[in-house]
Image 1 (cartoon, one colour):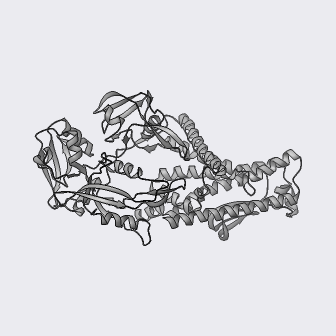
Image 2: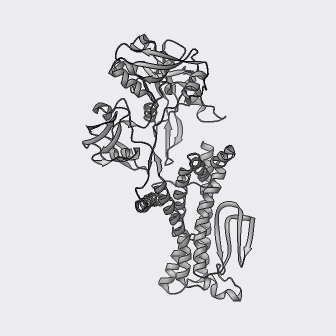
Image 3: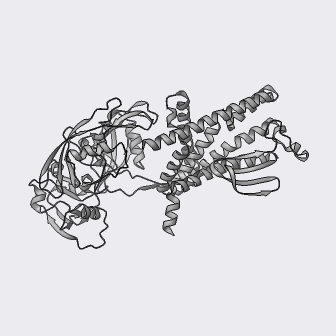
Length: 577
């Protein structure tokens, strides 16, 4: 049963049906209820288009579900120009209703979508949303490391402003480039204060606009405490530590992440408890990293005691997490654009079981985050040429350092704004994927506060969508960014995989999108009807029938063009992927 429920919640098609069904139902329900309120006779209430899958009739209204789940509609009697209605409904036909009634009905659909979003955000504000905790992992080169911030520190305040989650850290640091800033932190249960000045870097806004931001060099990623050692003599090798050891305790305290081991060893001699496999292999290391052994005799518990402290330089040159150990190459479909890239990595000698230790030109690559940053720096907008990389790697089964000289072709790709770029891929998976910090649950302090928080969250979402629409029509954001049913299905599937709260949050976001889009003053949309009704109110009488018919035909043509465009974009994305 649980497997079936999991499939239902994570299947993109099912998630799409649920997501679109809820949003469209609420939108059409708004029109329907407004029609009842205005005493306008309703002929049909439909979810979906095309042939009818299921229907029933109550009174004069037919309620139905159609096979194409791409929208819905409410059809009122007297909706079409020149339409005749039964004599008993003449006073309740839409084409004879006062303009204010028709305007209320037109606006009710988008209004219902706004109310749905607001209700969802109020509910989530009360229930609480899990957010990444404000615990930092300090990158090797950066303001934070130079200022004395340590991995595992919890940030409570930045510039006297309370920090509740990682989002607050990102927002406050980004807003303070080159401004001296006080950070109130907690380390080992003790409060501390650190002064640092975020470095100024140029970044891009959500819509591609260049903007200066502050950076201190921290991330949310914490490395797995399973190690690969370089074949050099040092404090760790003399103590008896080996490649593949998973460190589970330091000085009697349980270890969750590798930084806890590093900090203990930098402070002096330490007693370590490790779990060790007699056979060092990809399979054993992967099972070990995932804690999936289930009391397998392959692993044994070993006590190790170091006799001296380790220096920071020795640590960075000697130790890597299995988060940096290649498990396998990606399985790619025939014709995939990454195939030449994968072949180039294989040709230069990168093998399964290799651990990246050094990358000249990017000496701070000690973990996956730094590796990702280093690869991002190789992205070019107008350079399709290959890039030369030199790696120093250690294989888990060989006691030697190998230097790989690689010439890797760049791959054509599109960024989030559909701009062309040339990227450098590393199409591999790693033995382990890091560890996460327990998230914090952010909820409103009271029901009254949740009303304000829900409204602010809805307003922020609406502002972002309105800005996107403005830039779309101005050409600042290309039309290729528009997505159709396939894109929505992907969003729905990803949201469902993120859990019920993420899926509900996506319902709010999608409902706002539908509501605001329908308010655009385009023929055949609710906003187009409102525009014509406004003209009618100002003019004192309806526009001539021929004008209204021409406008409606223009609206249908524009919508058809839009449908063709979004389907084309969806298919193009599938082809490119």
